[in-house]
View: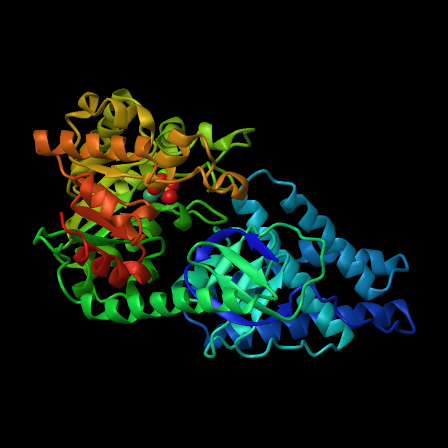
Length: 524
Ligand code: PEP
Ligand code: MG
């Protein structure tokens, strides 16, 4: 049997399936309400200890996720209803499960990918405590196994030994989940959206996380084809390492700038600045967590990245909240968030929040080679308004005698109106093509919907024609054009992007070597 899904982290894995959906062992009832409450308290404590041990050994990103779990476990808002139910006669495990399941249902019902992805965090917390309650030492997956199930808990990912290979295959899941982010940064192959097959599968399987699919009980012919693809991927990856420290250049000698996309300031800790041409996109949505970050927090975050990059450019994007990246207290509930109040539309509506970010950027600009760009621009008026706000805040800082600098201000090209009529934007400092959104809007195929993933292709001639038109317009007017969507790091798409006239790509750090190797193979 073969299932198709969406690749969340590229690579190949063959191995035995490990069932992620195995229910935890049973719970033994205690003698009194007091003992039930004590049992739950002890189990929460055990779960916190286990997470703390994991967090101590984890890198910055993973530790951040675990600390988020610990904070949730220690929050009375989560455990309060469970203790109340025990008081009215429920057993500790049933009370905890019911309390968490009702929270989880709320997250799962959200039509926003980000919140649905957080349901996985809550399920993880629920199971950690249930496991501690039942004293069920969790069965670890055998080294090299393919973890298969509905969804995967972040702690399960962190506790798994990936040194012998293995991969993740999810019936549901999301490319925007915490685990998907960890898998990409660690190079663990992962496929999501395989669909809820009712059939109980087990045994040996082949996971192709380059194209996005899994084969259960494969035939010898399946295995042979799979191993050829896996070998070719490993060869390409190995060979690519030699390109990492070199300037990217095509077979015909055209130089291509390759920058990196980052989301957290800590992302730069693992990147050697010599291996890239700067930061082509720093997303700032992730700084906006549970609370909106103040000016100082933002200033420090931007300054860290600018100082790391030295004289190389760092392009920071003003917050692109909304769509699949909602921010509590900022974005609004909408039936169709991808076509709603997101990106610059929301920033221009909530100018109080936007002005804080603008001041932080103006102040940070003195610490390096900053460029700032606006997301989701659809009309020249929006650009004009954003530029005017920069001028206003610059005047405020100047009047206060605060050190600052006005950076070049450019725009994302991700709404078709801009790509179709770039001449309306001849006064921008630069264009950066957001192929993720441009593709979903041109093809009318949501970027997070597995059912229409086959339509969501940058290589569709309509999308490529728009990219080529923007590149040509930029060349003619002397306006720099780069591309920072995920397509820029996809070796299969790079030739088409260079043929469309692009010479400046920005990719995920883990894709730098493969992207440079792919560029070296193109004859433009
Ligand atoms: C894009 O749309 O291609 C892009 C780079 O922005 P994001 O993925 O953050 O929407
Ligand atoms: Mg976008």
